[in-house]
Length: 116
Length: 109
Image 1 (cartoon, rainbow over the protein chains, first blue to last red):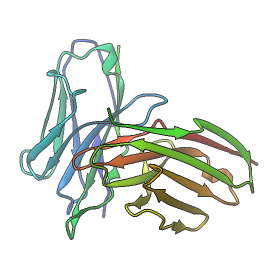
Image 2 (image 1 turned 180 degrees about the vertical axis):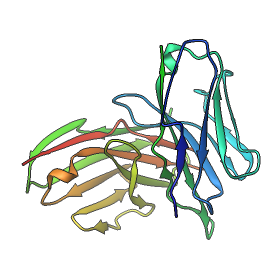
Image 3 (image 1 turned 135 degrees about the vertical axis):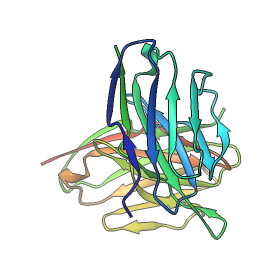
Image 4 (image 1 turned 90 degrees about the vertical axis):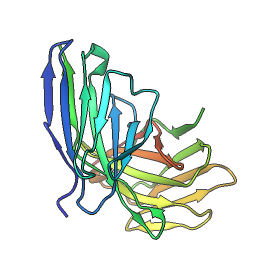
């Protein structure tokens, strides 16, 4: 069990640029989640996948945000035309179903995005 | 709108003290409540609670869910400096998981 892996760890970019983050979940986990966390707040749900299907998207996920999980393994989160307000920690988590019960999510260390 | 509220927002105690952290929720299609500990990076899982009144324990930490009161508490006994962290409560429904803002616990030597 190597845990949930995210990269890059940090991303600094200018406003207006596009950025892409990657998440590699725990290998046997079929569910993958993206969250955003700002200072002093808990993580806010963005979207989740079951295998390759994107099953839920938050209203927070504007049309500048897109997430994919093409083969049901790793996932990418892209933000286009970044804005100052996108500066945050982007967390990925994964979980699996066991006997019909969704097990706890395990988180990666996140990608910290800073928009200049 | 669904919400998860934690209290207190911050807490400073001395080593050896016992603390109780609170979480209340209003979540449609509630399935489970989870507690996480967040130090500098990833939240790490502590407990998942689905049934009312059944205490879960792990060492000095314990937690219990009250579905009637829509709340949960997390207890830490004999606190140590290593317990200093943000403790997050999260409620899960069919699809997503909603977090509270967390309680920042500082344990002084």
